[in-house]
Image (tube, rainbow, N blue to C red; front, side, top):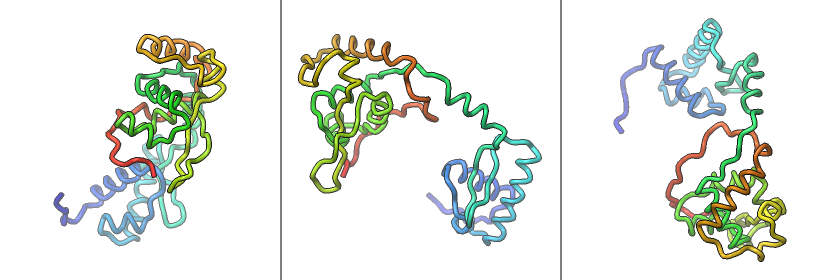
Length: 213
């Protein structure tokens, strides 16, 4: 990628600042912004103050908040009631193929690490494991006595109740028809008790380049 040695106009610099703050989500140091934009830090702060006034004048839904030697893009306070209303809406749980496959691996191989799951599936399983934890079907079962002390995952009592078994040893030999039946039963019973929706929907699985340490 070629470097852009052209000096930025004020409008272009504010455009870049907005993009960086939106993409990063958290706070970004003003010194870092100055280094990226190749502008004096005082100049960057002046542009940020201009942006703050512009946002307020246009009554935007976001604002730029100054922290200690850093700035962050945040939602405006008067939008909070609507944000809370959105995330509080119940969402019917959906056990996708990815989630069901991950649950099956954990159920039959437990206790198991994320790296073990990813070696079996061949793709990253972070999202699927996190969703199963949120639904209360999977929980941490300690750590493996190995370098990095990776977390071990296993099924919960909620899992046993949903699938009407006493112990994981009671699990039958799985086939596609049985997995589909388990999926329907779990979704029906979890409906109405699902966690608040996440800000982002499930991303596509990506190949796992590196196993969990």
